[in-house]
Image 1 (tube, one colour):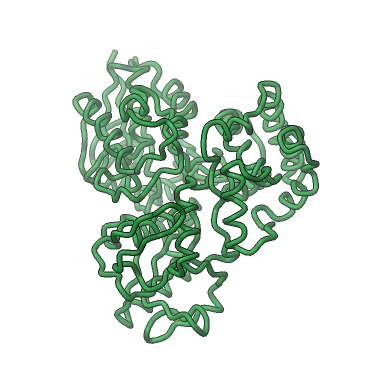
Image 2 (cartoon, rainbow, N blue to C red):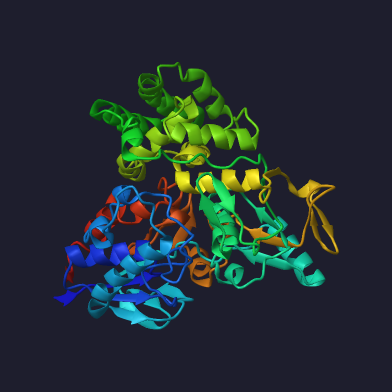
Length: 492
């Protein structure tokens, strides 16, 4: 008998969780990790040297990342939304505990093939190969590629939101910064351009330092900011599903995967409707019907008013709308439905329809802390931020920058749109090679074909559900992968 060998490609939070889970079920496993980054176990979004203004969008009380408990490690208030850097320091300590038990190759793995075992960049053979690369390199979308080329030709500034090192190194005074996208990454950037420049909140007002940009213009197709999460545990608890309701939704997800796309989404919303009706005392069916027809598209107010409404609901000053309630309820159900969604079959079309519905709810379920929404409101009132509705045909490329309208010419563009998880856009040579050799296929996300090969993370979206969550990295799907893949650490 000999010991099994496992190679893990990429060690962000999910790779760290997978390595810990593998060794928990197979302590004698021989484990080799390929990770080139300076902070193994952390990934690009939780670097310990990240700016303190960049906050996680989950409060400490919700961070179930296994042992040791993050809340115990951090101390302090359970209602706090910790800086991403604090999460990074916590994950780094877990990596340091893991490090003596693994072989670490500080390089990007570029090739893998099967020859009586998996060979990775000449190392091996390994019995199992796990890809946990987070977001592998992808082709820039056409808009970003064109704008990047324009910036290079005109010697303008075009930046990605992450890592934030470049943003923190610029003198922003007098600049006009356009932000492509208006989700959580844009709120991080807004905080960096204001609080990170020495500004501060004074009650509900913003006190400028004078080092901020002249104007910050986040824009998107609808100009709508995400809705903030409930302000505290008491308000949040109002959206807790009952045990019977949780079971009903789990059953609905299992059944939905046997249905056609439209019927599947209908099945899911029919299970959600009684929960929403109980919490809001209103009939949610008209809203749910509209959401089924066009996920994420229905909002009635202008962006600034929507922000004010969202804050008042998050703070418990206004009764929750149907949409807000659905988003919070769904957030609380994600852990329950991930396992059944991954375990059941279903056509790619049906899975894609359910994923599209879930993605539409992210404007509610993946919202920021109230603190970030209050900052945005204060900056709008101060005149430092203007929310804009803009799309590519209406944005004119000029010698001096990006013309958003007849009054706004941005001389800086910050790309806050994170790449999608589409496998077709991946340029990573290892993944492309495995696809070309037939070891992987694209079937609603990356799907292994050859025994011993596994994939976890956002490139499996469609095979998995809600893959962007930090909690999901350390959740049941990862534990179940370890049990099935390396549960017996010895081979004949």
